[in-house]
Length: 268
View 1: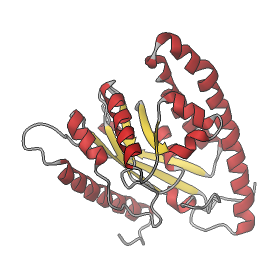
View 2: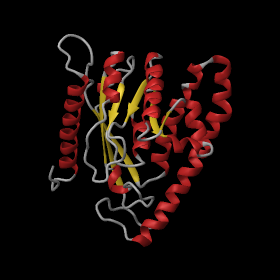
View 3: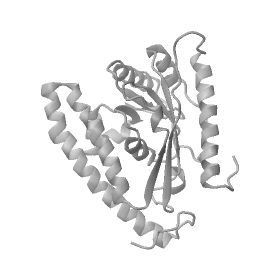
View 4: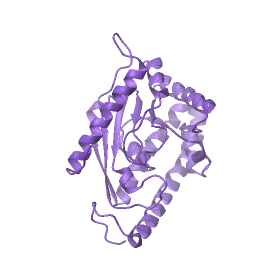
């Protein structure tokens, strides 16, 4: 593999192309291995003993993410705020969305059993999509009201089983890396189900693998910052619209701090 030690310099195409191909090949075979375990071992066993066995696929996803970070030395992950997670509780997890690599970061970095929403097209991908469907991840057709309503229904069922659910409330990946307006469905759901919100900030993924590109641009240090949980019930709790606005502002401020710390020249 070409020399890719620098984290600050963008690689020329002759480096970017082979490095990206190698990384995707490694990711393919690791994903194939873990998807096969989930589909052919765990999922059939869950038909006998129920959903609790199938929830082991979330743990398998976590191992998948952490092994990928080890096997692909282009990336490393720093996790902040682990103490803010109570493993005895479930949450509506709110995360910003910069890149396709965000899923890798959250499954590797969050010590929680959780489901996430993903484009319905992803579920049609052989093995990986089948794994996601069997594990209970939630398909969504963007811009389709009925699909969004159905996805919220699935999320509600998971929450009532004691499972956490992760939303990217921007609805799509950010082209400029900033945190854009939030859709309100996740916040309304959290308040309806009286579940705390766990705000999570991701940074670094958009720099290396931006939207509409499969080529990795440079070596990357990812950051996953876990904020303080936000209560959605009790006395004097604001409306879910106000909670959404305050969570977004807090996440934007935390993202600026992360970037200022890793890149002192960055202007928020």
